[in-house]
Image (cartoon, rainbow, N blue to C red; front, side, top):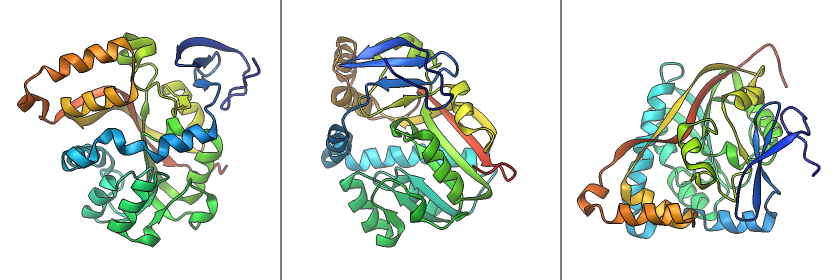
Length: 289
């Protein structure tokens, strides 16, 4: 196996988990985990073209949108003590819930999205010129343009994280902030669920913990804090996600038990920890990429 870590260059990896036809390999040096082999590009295109089907937008779109907005409001409350206005970019803006909340709070909002459905919805809401409908490139925005950039459930999808973070660095103003929410391989939920962890998906390429995320970000970014990330979710939504994305016996049993809970309870919006970390960092001004 010829596998070199994209963060530290170490070629020594251990197989720690597996699902479907993939192995989960962990770098011995920085502990970054990687899906091996990478999925075919055609398969990823297919996945992203159907990506929001699991949200069941046709039947419960308003409720899902509300949960997404509530989640991002909670994120923004953790960010605004450090940055509360200016130009804002959400990479992976989905159907625009984060952009809507940021706009309500006075930010000048822009988005990047690759899902056709998400692109259509966001351009309709925020304007053609505000939404980039493809993967982020250096040429999309002027250098040092944004005060705040967010990556919520995005970094794990990126196949070249070093190059990607370099692009983010270039379009962020000196002293600007970057917020990241991504699965945490050191979380107790990951340790409990093992290979059945809900974040193990075909489109998730890299999996981080505190050590590997700092390896990716330092010294170009100064870490403000790394904490647990919480989402606002309903039991109905969790059951839909488990049904759509996971197909093991543990998930099927979980869906079964969730569905027998009274419907009125399944609709409640709850603050939940699902094994992700929340990183806020600031662009360093002394060590450009």
